[in-house]
Length: 422
Image (cartoon, rainbow, N blue to C red):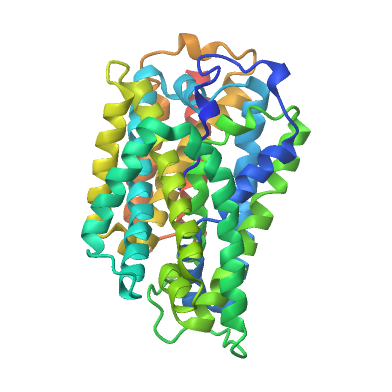
């Protein structure tokens, strides 16, 4: 689901020149367009079934505000420094510490690949069941899809990158059409479903909504460093998450409550939208998964420069395929909640460093130590606390992702204060 752009390999080792900057609203359009994704629909549909329409929309509004607040902070740091996410992480965690963070982020991309290729498999199953004469089952379609997407990422990523800018917004149009068709049959019961596919409380639902976009927030500097001014960065973030997340939630929750289904592929086929709509959804999955593999390849290539990027992409595609075959789509909400525990502390640490530690220049990344143990300790410490706490339903705010962010930020501030006094 994460969406880095090919610009991430431009001026990757230093600050971006000012003459390449753009207004904030252009970045906002990119962020908002990628919000309309099939995993985002599934998240919204399952939340709508569990909380009902009003609870789901409230969760989406709060998630949009939380994501906006986090994105404003990461964007401000990137505008001030013009550095990529990798360089910001490197100066906060150290050279080898950043390598560890990169490995974790690459694994997250591979998980997202597994989620998206599961949609590919479901789409092909839906087409086969509707009489298109396509032989195969979910597992074979997942394997075939993984191979094709991996090959296209190696040999044709730039074309797919451009296609994503067209295909992803068209998913929004298809979802609107499905919503209109579902609502046309009569009034919709907006109460929570009697037996939702994924039962969850408000806090877990909010954490899943936040976790589903947290990698985008943490990696925001790859995009937001192109924004011309700090004010433009704040405006850009305010125009993206607070609007896009609630809009997608309204659409997906209404569809799920009206039809009792969360499988968009089955809905598209069952409602008679036919092959063109199904192909557009497949194109969306294809392009976004190519971006996942490409972004993971960049992360791993920076960590292991002796490895060739095509090899990394092939291995990543195989790992993502295994995740899909293991049923990652069936554990989608737990996956998102876990992301909300792993990723926010990373962003909190490099944001705090940007405001308090590295205020006198942008070249500190070049002289970063091998490991900044204080950052590593806070990151691991927050996971050691928040993961068991979530398992035993111990919480400060009822939202695990927010708990992880606040805990990591408070702990890191205390560590920095103690370090100054010592």
